[in-house]
Image (cartoon, rainbow, N blue to C red; front, side):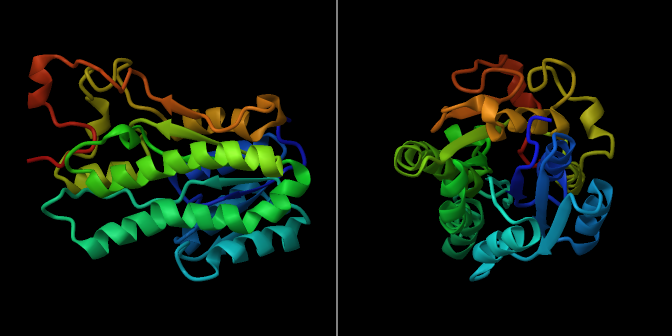
Amino acid sequence: MRLKDKVIIITGSCTGIGKAIAIRCVAEGAQVLVHGLEQELGEAVVSQLGNGNAVLHIEDITVAGAPQRLVDIALKTFGRLDAVVNNAAMIVSSNIHTTDLAYFRRVLEVNTISPFALIKAALPHLGKVSGCVLNIGSVNAWSGEPNLLPYSVSKGALMTMTRNLGDTLHREEGVRVNQINPGWVLTETETRRKQDQGLPKDWYTGIPRVYAPSGRILWPAEIAAAAVYWLADESGPISGQVVDLEQHPFIGRNPPKDATTIPSPHEEKK
């Protein structure tokens, strides 16, 4: 029970990686606040986790006061707060030609500014228990693909914030801040996006090995397993760190020349 008696807020946890993290955290002894936009899906997650282990809050994280409400609900329900997982994000495809300023600002608001707001709201309580923050980024934070411009920029900004606060808050408040950057993960959202882009329902069964050396892409549960280390006391004093979770080196990789003929993980099918 690596997270016994810890209380953790997990944003965007009605589906995908966030849901997997919530399930794993409860299995490790934690109580969690499940958050997202999908009422029915969120209720199903809470039901799966069991009464007393989870509470649900449905609200757009960018709405004024939403971060503080998440903190207040966690405290009212469970009596304390030990950790925050900033997972909620807009995963969207657009490039410099298809991105207007309003759209760019919306992506930044969800993916970067709202995590900052939640950290700020939670900080007084995390400081009391030497708590921690885990930000869920993306390997695209390092530069990203042409058709993932605002998303990649937002995750790059989140990564810089993690390193900045991971230093400052650890020294001044005793709160650790770290980040994991998942690679290509088979979530419900990714499955639907690829179908919307024209790929068959079983597209994930034939991933070229240039993108998935193992023959498959990552599962949400594998990201959740890694998340537990950063949320548990066993990660000790480590703070301000960013870890890529992908099955091949992302930075400086040299894929085969014929890889340009294969649809990339996030690129829309032409």
